[in-house]
Amino acid sequence: MAAAILSAGLAGCINIAAPDKPIVIELNINIRQEVIYRLAEDAANTIDENADIF
Image (cartoon, rainbow, N blue to C red; front, side, top):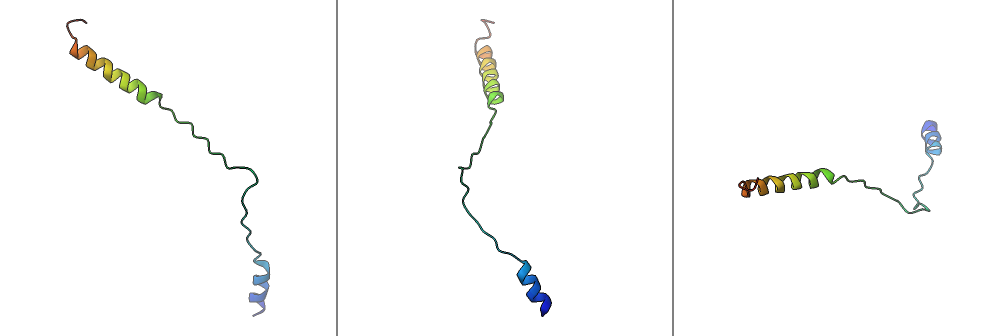
């Protein structure tokens, strides 16, 4: 019984509060690869469609 009372006193309390500063989430997304892929695909289609020019 004494152990239960002692452990309850040491448990402490939990406080949840909003931060003073706003939360900032930085997203660095690299879309370069997709753009290059699309340009390469468009170039290949153009070459195929106009094979007599090239």
